[in-house]
Structure formats: C-alpha cells, structure tokens
Length: 239
Image (cartoon, rainbow, N blue to C red):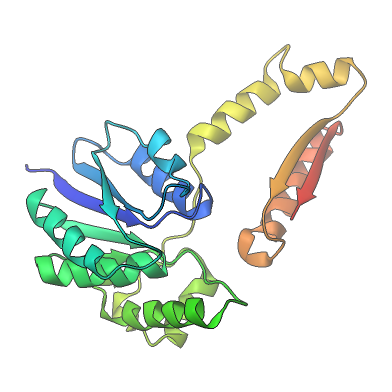
C-alpha cells in the first residue's frame, strides 16, 4: 500500500508549543504508513528555525518556503508548486499565517487541507489582529479542523466552523522526553537520589503563560500526587 504523504506547514516564531507539537507528531507517526514532510517559512536571517535541527530525517524531508517579510502572497504559489512537485496528498497547517497560505495553496494544488489551531493571541496590534481574524475566518473552509482543547473547540463554534469538520484531538506530549525524565528520577544514583543524599531538593520547572489553557490545573493536580510520594520534589512556576 502506498504511504500517505503529508506536508506539515508552519511559520515558526521560535521553538515553542506549536513547533514542539509538530516535532512530537513526526516522532510518533508510523513512518512505514505515513511520510511526513515539513515545510517552514523562511522570512529573515534572524528567524529562529530550531525546529529544523530536531526534525527526524526518518519522518520526511524538510522544505523552506521563501517569504519576503512577515507576509508574502507569493509564498502561496511557492507552496502550491512544492505540493505538486513532491506529490503531497494532504497538507496540515499550524497557526493563523500558515492557515491562510496553506489553505490557498492547497486549493490551488487540489489537495485536502487540515488545520490544528494552537491558540490565539489576545492583545495585538491592528495589523496582527487583521491577519488573525482572516485566519480564523478561513478555518470554516478547511476540510477538517482539529482543535487541541475544549476551549479551542468552543472557539471553532464561535468562528462558525461547521461542526462536521471539527475533530477534537486532545493535546499531547512526546512520551519519549517524559519517559527519559522519569527514568532518571527513579534510577539509583540519579539526580533525585543525589538531591536526597545531599539533603536538598529536586526541582521541576514550568515555563509558560500562567493561564488554564496551558494545563496548569492538571499540572498542579499531578504534582500534588507526586509530592506526596517524593517529598523532596519541588515545583517552580515561571511565567
């Protein structure tokens, strides 16, 4: 059976939640059944493209879409040509700018387009606000939209995305990273054991916006259970 060829498209603003989500997806797909290429916008020399350094070669190839400035309508043509050249079956977009460019390119290339919303900024300038409104408006025209939380599902209703197109897939984490951290926490002589031996503590850190959408209630609930079993563990929140 021919593998499905998917193109993940994102306009990176660093190496944050959405970029890590794309990486986790690529790491955990069945590479025998799905080829997962990655396309990113290349907008300026100072742009953080750290995602490319971590993207697994076994998942698929990496492509850069040249953009002159923060928004370049010619990127639509470049992306559409890439879809045709690489014989992409499906494009998967992440973020308002990727949604706008990705949907128009997909329609031009004649392939389905799926979006995963990762949240929307609040207080922004008028130009950014205009692009965000355009991106959220276009969500209703995607073949499917996969929000990552109940809050984002409600947003889809607010943006008039047809319910038949919404596929709620709860946000996840790459268990490879978690398993490695837990293994070190539990093994003899690990960092946790060293902390206890020295009469110190083992600190787990959270860095991000201190809002419910970032999963803080769940984090505190899980940490409460962990701390009861390992009193030397501390949680530090930075946001």
